[in-house]
Length: 113
Image (cartoon, rainbow, N blue to C red; front, side, top):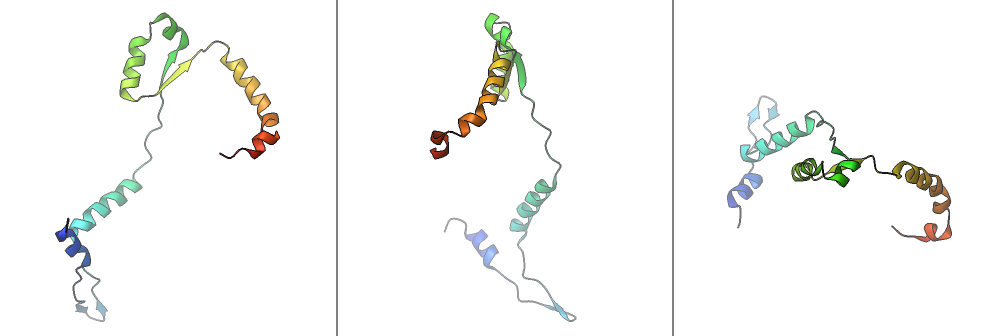
């Protein structure tokens, strides 16, 4: 048995003691209760701050001036936002405008994701 003491702790129950007209609840071993309490408190903690990836200009990637910042960002979080990509805004606009027509085609309707 890999964790015999834990199994005994989970399965063990004390006989209820009479406390006036009420009885004591089954025993909860502190080895089990403490981690449960910790998880409960963690779940009640405030939301973590929002994540903002490091933003690197496209021009800095082209000329190499942002290589140190890129390597540092990838090493720390693994996420980088590239800004100022030539032609991106127009391409994004064209794709968003064409999306409803594309989604209405029979091929798109039959596609299983």
